[in-house]
Image (cartoon, rainbow, N blue to C red):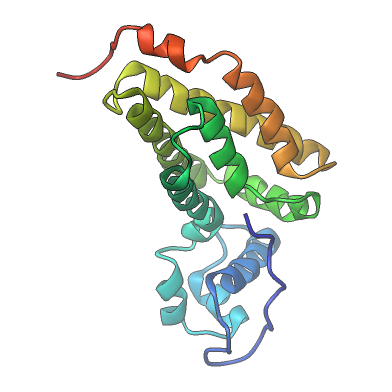
Length: 214
């Protein structure tokens, strides 16, 4: 994933040249950290960025969406990566390649990401909404696995692969976030290679299809 851009110029009225979702995100994160998520309004974010409230809503449906903007972009990138992956790659190798390929966070990105995670964990509303975003990530993996295995996406093995891949990736992310000693890809590679060792595509093909709704 692309590294954070430079902070935008603050305090101008009207729409500044090059206004983007990323620029609004930088401003919003700073205000959230300073004043708290509940006490920061869309109007304050827009004013600090030098844009109108209407411009803010061109990029985000709500102020909460600012915190998930990068993650939701990763889900879209993950689906695109799965669409382009070579059919010759084994299932778990293909999943690892796609997941690692869309995550390009570096050690210097950690402070901002820590701020983001602290904001989400400190607000009950944001915590409650987190599962929707994680579910979308998991479904991207499950649907890819289902296509490879020739099973419906709601059958057991695709669901298990999607869920365990998410769990391994989150474990890698949490460990990386606490250490900040390398790129995130280093941790993802190790975690997902370990996960792949427990899955054998040929053996999976011999297991019965269970847990599928009729």
